[in-house]
Amino acid sequence: MRIVLLGAPGAGKGTQCKRILSAHSLTHLSSGDILRKERSEGSELGQKAQGYMDSGGLVPDELIVEMMVKAIDDLPTGGFVLDGFPRTVNQGVELDAALTASGKALDVVLNLEVHDDVIYDRMSGRRSCPKCGAVYHLVSLKPQVEGVCDHDGEGLIQRPDDQLEVVKKRLETYHQQTKPVVQYYQKNEVRVFDVQADGDADMVSVEIQEILAGMGDSQTV
Ligand code: AMP
Image (tube, rainbow, N blue to C red; front, side, top):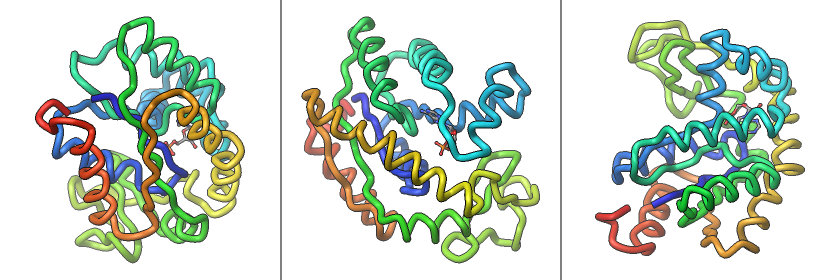
């Protein structure tokens, strides 16, 4: 099964990906995680991406498409969940071309829908571990010791792109450039499911599992 997970920043894509992976044997490919790794390694791509990421804009399509097509090509056989990619219609077109060339069509697009005010609450309280990437929330997902990662004891930070002004810009970017990707897939014979994701992550997860189970034998997912 090849899945694309769409949704605004803070819609819960990362959380839901983890849950999908715990139920199905798929590979998770997050464009944001790959970019952050490139940055932490100081690669040329990471350096080029830095300014766009910190200001809440999108990294140019040509850089992202090359990075993600390579990551998909390098995957072991089996399915995948794409998280954060594609984020523009052009990226969607390029992804389709690459998948068609390698005989791997997408099976389903899951579109997480969350109201903007919920996104603001979630993202302004989000704290991350700079070492392992674990994500917490000041109110809804506290670490055992305030300000410290449960996994490795590292001090938690607020990612520069989770700061309020940047969140505003990221949401604007989402509405202008990423929402049209949903319509692109609706017109392209890929099954698209809108998932209401304002509420509890467990409920969202149940809905996603039902959708995936309905796609066919879950043993093959
Ligand atoms: P994320 O963690 O998915 O929210 O991504 C963090 C940042 O990485 C985004 O705000 C963008 O600057 C950049 N980014 C991630 N994925 C893409 C993409 N598909 N296209 C362009 N920029 C991206």
